[in-house]
Image (cartoon, rainbow, N blue to C red; front, top):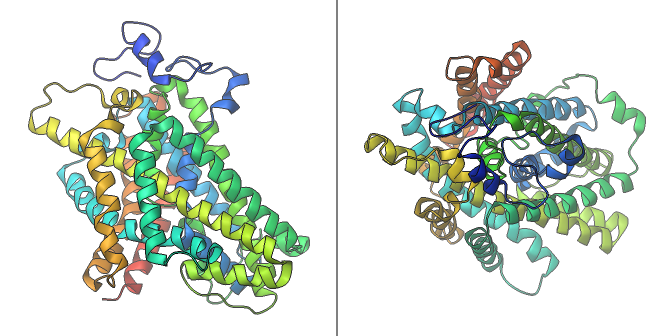
Amino acid sequence: MTSTGETDGTGGTDSAERRTAAGAPGEPPAGQPPGRRTSWRLIGPGIVAAATGVGAGDLVATLVAGGRFGHTLLWAAVVGCLVKIALAEATGRWHLATGRTIFDGWRGLGSWTTGYFAVYVVVWGFVYGAAAMSSSALPLVALFPDSLSLRTWAILCGLAGLAFVWFNRYAAVEKTMMVFVGVMFVIVVYVAVRAAPDLGATLAGLLPVLPDGSLVYTLGLVGGVGGTITMAAYGYWINAKGWTDSGWMRMMRLDNRVAYLTTGVFVVAMLIVGAELLHATGTAVGSGGQGLLDLGGVLEDRFGTVTAKLFLVGFFAASFSSIVGVWHGVSLLFADFVERTRAARAQGTGSEPPVLEIARGRRERSRPFRGYLLWLTFPPMSLLWLDEPVGLVIAYGVLGAFFMPFLAGTLLWLLNSDRTPRAWRNGPVSNVSLAVAGLLFVVLCVQELRELPW
């Protein structure tokens, strides 16, 4: 497909620029489908999106679900994996089929989308920055107990994330995230295997059963793990990879499925750890990142110091990967928001196709991109000294609760309209998947709003 000033990927004056956008030696030119032999080598953007969405809070939620209900909710983790695949595929399909970014699509639905996003991205970034830095600091305090304070480690983590994203482009971010995912995956699966799971009970957990009191945990497993604003950033990462038109559709779908299936295995392993080490022994863990530290203590008692330390390394990899991913992906979203808003005010003068700007790395050097990096890093540090104001917590919770229904609903709207070329519009399976995801997230939204400290 094409956008203003582009060809269809089969030739023309823009093809050389697209080839430059792909960049990496040995990769096929952007806009041309990769050969079957090279497809697995090119996997990456989906791993970045999936790893960014899995933070300490998601790990604890999965751990607690396994601790309370054993293997019974395993099926919910599988359904959650399928929901994420459907949402990310729809986001990527929009970017590739139209040559437009998701924010550009939202703007076409009305000014209300721009208003919501503007408030959301500012408030969300302020609160999330502090949470991400604190989560990354917790395992470091446990690994090096007599060194620095939690606050100091948190600041150092934030500064490290800022410096890394500031001085590197997408290619370096992707390689680093692949390492983090490898560390997370190997360590958590290793711990799950060491826990010696009951195979019969594990397989029985694939049957859809809702024990008493499990609804909230079930919804959290289906909708919470890996379900954040970074799902909207997926399209920006595939563009940054150099995938800029529908010739890359097959590659995007492979990338997306491999990434979220990997995350699915990771989540299942964490559920098994909770079922075998907590549920079977009646052990409880704390909330937030403290719950993972509590699990580290359980692992040390049962398997020794080495396994416990390894788990803390995996905990750090999961938390710090969210810093790197969010600092990069959401900053791309924010840069697109600023630049498209400016272009609209200037009546579109001097505007280059935004997808190509992302593929060339120009967005990663732009003032809006770096400005949002600074916003994610320095203002949130004030929350490390202060209790989060109740009003800010409420605003963050309300805006965040509405984001995933907003994403699912707008994707249904965009991909069933003439804004999307007919060949790439939703089919029945996509529509059902997105509708189910949207309904699920609405229920989660209501539940989150009820739990806020009004």
